[in-house]
Amino acid sequence: MSAPATVSKALPEAQEILALVQARLEDDKSEDIVSIDLRGKTSIADFMVIASGRSQRHVGAIAEHLIEALKEAGVKHVRVEGQPACDWVLIDANDVIVHVFQPEVRTFYNIEKMWSGTRA
Image (tube, rainbow, N blue to C red; front, side):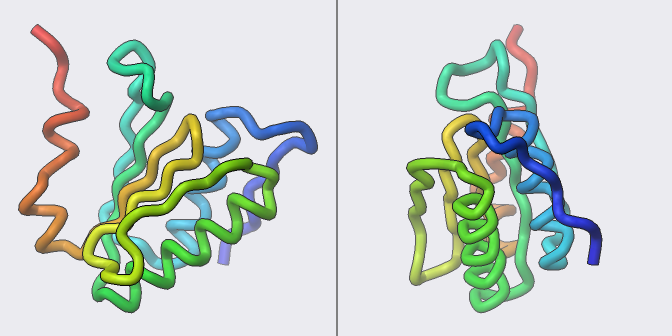
């Protein structure tokens, strides 16, 4: 298990939240973790992180652990969609949006392609 990401005592900034999210996802054995820089593309968040779990149970556990870690780090107003089905759980941590998918659902929606593409 890797060392927990440190977050400052004040409200965490986007980069700190991103580091925490990535560390937690890796600790929980998430698969195919992708981070997308949204700065300059949209005002909804600074970063989007997409990851997969192997089953509904794994997706649910990843989401629960991540929500708990965010709250412990002082991230306020964390919003969650997609529980208890756990095919696709969206965690809105203000400046970082996290999507945790089952692989077949992730393939179907393919949001990486939509958000990582450059504008013409």
